[in-house]
Amino acid sequence: MRIVRHDEHGAPAVLRVEEVEKPQPGPGEVLIRAEAIGVTFAEVQRRRGIPIGGHADLPGSPGGDVAGVVEAVGEGVTNVMVGDRVVADVDRGAYADYVVADSAWLIALPEAIDAAEATLLPSPAQTAYHAIKESGQLKPGETILIDAASGGVGHLAVQIAKVMGAGKVIATASTQAKLDFVRDLGADVTINYTDDDWDEQVKAATDGRGADVVLETVGGDILTKSVQLTAQFGRLVFYGSASGTMQPIHPLALSRMKTVAGFALYAMLYNRPEAIAAGQRDLFDMILSGKVRPVVHERLALTDAVKAHELMEARAHIGKIVLVP
Image (cartoon, rainbow, N blue to C red):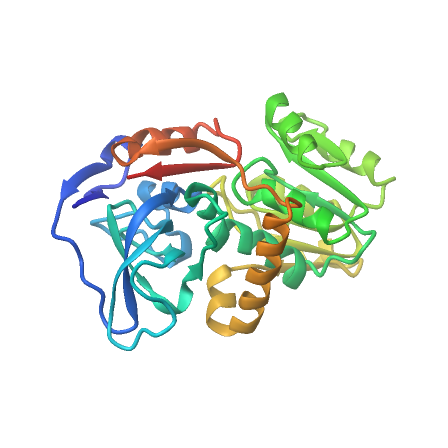
């Protein structure tokens, strides 16, 4: 079978396709024949050598969200059978024809959901849902500011926030095409965060008070300004650093009863499995009812992994980029 790996950190060109033996599932694991593999920006950063999620080891083999059919089950697996359609977050070795996944983290897929669209369920949709509900504690009628709103997580967060009753969704993105995209998804206000006065535009959209909930995944100067744009008694949720840079947050910036909360999906998976299960049910209802629409920007062959990473680095996509073996 084929798998994508890299022996050094660097540009997308370090990724290469190799032929290896098909893996076998161990106890508590399943083997999935991949139909679609969601590409995440965290793997772009790991490929560069930035230790997102605690590791950027070599040799590297990118992880991702894999949808497909169960080919074999390991000892002790009782929640799925051979032939079931599933999707799973796979930490390493996801860009492959076959992947091994922990059976505890599988999501069973109804036939009505396309495999490529299903790759948004494990990481992007769960991140958007729980960052808003658990960490952001969004209440009906509140204003939410979503940075990088056209990406894999952001475009789902815009829709999920509307379903959860947000009074106003303010979405930022870097081009007019992306702003048009998130407005079509339901954003009430769209702002180009490359504008010098983007933060002043957010203040104007909130009558100077700021947003009750802020979802921030860029880092750097965007994070600093996002803290300032968090309303009194508001909650800023930090769930990534796409810029690769971090600025310290001075305690005095939080003195008006502001809260900064970090979010990591793995912390939820390990410690709040009941919340994850409830989130899965809610997300299926939202998607199958048409209230939330996962968007796939492009479907590429497994051998086009380099192109997939190039698109991610160039911020040339809206929604999700998916590899299709």
